[in-house]
Length: 251
Image (tube, rainbow, N blue to C red):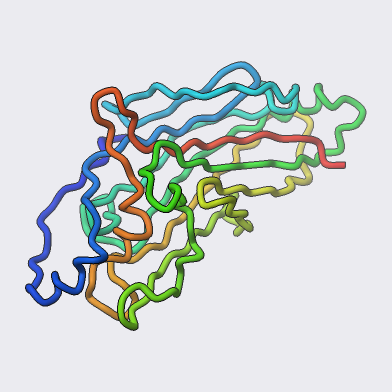
């Protein structure tokens, strides 16, 4: 079930001394933001969004040829998107947690792949995936996927902690971080049948604790991710995460 992504719950009281130390690090609290998961195909957008959220996605559609058609690969099933508060991710029960996930499933039509590739079909496909962040706040050029911050000094001797990992059907995959706005995954699927379909579940896990490493200063999540998230307001779109997938025959 989808629900609105809210910033809820009570804030922990801070001492004056702690607040003074945080003054240079604390950023404006994000309120609400819209996440829209889409798959780009040969002819259309496939849009899935939490109920009550804006489901309009804009962008230029590019024609890449039949290997990119939704006849071959398309968004399928539920999309899971992390919830958060101002200072941290939260789990389904509203408890603070150190990680959040974006999970999306794609379905590959193997029969159509066999038909498209004909005699060249060898039961192997190169699968290309990406996750793009759109409509982020203009902070650090909007590079919210900037994991290079991990283990760097934030304040005094305290450090940031930020990692992004991904799995495809439960197997860990290497992510290419491009300018902090796009995450790319390239993987090969082998031993595929010539009929039926195959579902591929992709999970991006963001490990961003609430506090700076070794401290009780709640500035890690805020600085690494929270400050980039933009709430939808009036005619201004909120932050969107756009998921895309396409396949090609392995040479």
